Length: 373
Image (cartoon, rainbow, N blue to C red):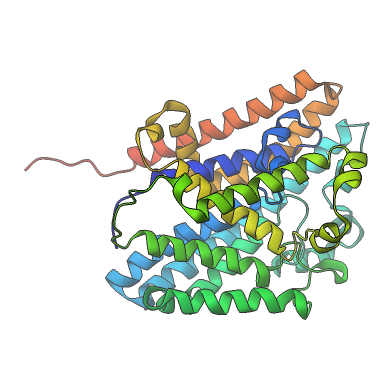
């Protein structure tokens, strides 16, 4: 495997973290700038795909160098850390929401965050929390990542040898899950909002792309717009953008949207990763990769801040989960005016950047000093 690091992956992970943060602040004007406004997919697809990419890249190298057993131990240790972080993060989130709700009179933040289940049945909620079945709003991605990571040791050896076979089995499971209504149980008889049996396909595809990217390939000489797949992907993205933008004006949407197309397209399920969502993300990823190959653009100052957040995606994601209800509280106390909402959204991103900067500095200070002989 090639040891070169593609800084674009870190950049897109950081960008996804910003989008997730903005999308989870109610009424945030900057949420209109995120990817969900111009298509069927959103930052969740970016997050899961790049999680699979990074996991296959990191643990694949360990498996090739030290063996499958060592790689599996590393994966399980990482999953355990994520599990502990999930429990700790949920406790902090509940504390912040309960305190914030006492200061906000315009809305019920406990209801918005889905925490009344804990207040009405705390003992069962604690059990469900330990079993990853109690997931308030903002907390769904982390349990999904934990479960997908736990399944990685089962497929990693096959991915390193015949990745196309693993992708084929993953596609089959993705198609069967909604057909037979397979999902995991959540609290109060519900199911996981992110069905792991469907979303595993995006994780596997990310890993497959990472493995493919490490192989030697002849350089592309044809311009992207001369490639048929690029043209088809671009057309699909434009159609999705028109449909998504028309949702802002329901009367216009109902007037021009063909009935047969609407019957096939809707509902666009996020729980089971609807094919329309999946295709939109894959088209978006392909077109973006073609238009923005590795180059000097990743050395820009703003790009480097996003790259740094992407390198510490777990810590920054957890910090963003805690900042979202605080930003919502600040907006409510400020009268929910758009200047206040914009300021809180930008301040939150600034704090996320500062956290990544501090983590990067702390990592450098922790390195052993090389003393000359």
